[in-house]
Length: 96
Image (cartoon, rainbow, N blue to C red; front, side, top):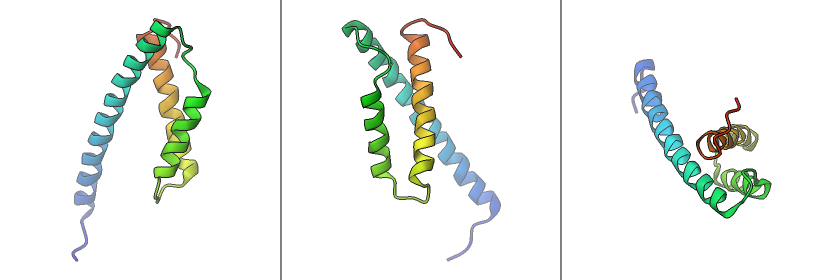
């Protein structure tokens, strides 16, 4: 098996980065939709039980090489940004 060059590896990483961005934006659209549902039902934006479930789900899917702690840190950030997006897009509350 032939080793890949740095340029080939970088192209593959760039391609994966584009896919990650696309998936994050698809997730963000669903977050906005979910936020609208929460607003209609009078539910709070923050749901600690759901966030724990999301973290539990992604940890159980992780096969490495990223550690579970790394996955948790990444998803905590994704969840934080999702809440921020809901506040702005659904609840019209600007906060950085």
